[in-house]
Length: 428
Ligand code: ACO
Image 1 (cartoon, rainbow, N blue to C red):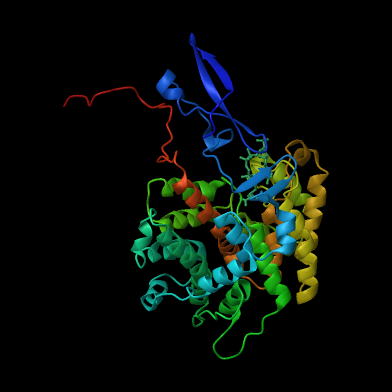
Image 2: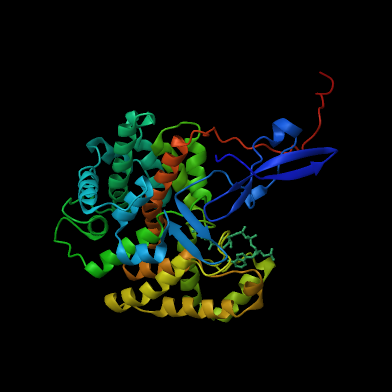
């Protein structure tokens, strides 16, 4: 931490506590309360961590009011237009976009680790066919740690690097294998001459009986989706990765925790819920207006999925990019644009409705991503898996940053106890 020159004062109960002020490079201000309890006996209380920073990080910057997202300083719009997912992964993990030579080396190393251990085949057959692929993926990544116990050694940079590469390389193989198992088709093994997105598409949709022809427009759309999901600072899943990693557990077990957190409908699982919402509106011949009314009614337990965000209080820049991509993909694959039309109608109504305006609720990344996944034939229960594939380099980069931080401590929040005061078992 930088040496504090500024302090805020907290006065309570006859005591004055000086809290060091920490300023980020974008002038964000944090009050360092790490010594508050030793000095005063008090703690701060912030359920959902709405006003709590858990770390200092140099990876991703978000300005939720202005709708800005940057990875390592680069605007998401530029990265989306001018880079590939593996370049962005390199940027997040190692701090810089790779030179051509570095990219070749990185890509080549990732390619050489795409296969799974032969004994891993039996893992999938132990699980029910209709299992949701997110817990399957979480379990698979956790189980992968048993094949690579050496990555426990976070002190060895080489072990960490190989672990990082293994995860990046094997996640698409695992995800596609989970899908193939669920539909009863033979697993397609990776083809290392293909780029990251094309290789994944072939493992998902190819069959051994015939050649799978890759559509470069679809592969590019998948690569873009992975870039847009690659990191988002201290969200629920990333904080889970950091918290689990803070106990110095194996890298893969932290990532398994991140996948589990991402599965929830208030986080990455929202992309599946969005498409289910759009399909329901379409099949019930309901109008978008009626659905928006229901989402505003607190007694209905309905939310406009894909709308609202803890950090963005304006348009999510990723949703802006995806809205544009939706049209390109749909016109390419020649599918129905009905769901996109419903989504755009929902957006139009909500953005002109006082309920959404007053609460700063705008489309988030999940609002349009599902429409693209659907158009390119990704099954609905695989949407959140796609999110996990994209978020992987961000989770790992955050884990690496935490483990390299000299102020690193095990994460252990406090609480305010509200239960019974001491009592004793009567008559014994
Ligand atoms: N539809 C209707 N009302 C909403 C919505 C929504 N999608 N989102 C928030 N609100 C309302 C809440 O009811 C609340 O109203 P109130 O002040 O009258 O009680 C107000 O807006 C604030 O909402 P909170 O839930 O307190 O906001 P929070 O920051 O905790 O939650 C969240 C953010 C979880 C994303 C929320 O907006 C939501 O549930 N959205 C729908 C699910 C979704 O799209 N999740 C994906 C998020 S992006 C991601 O994880 C990748």
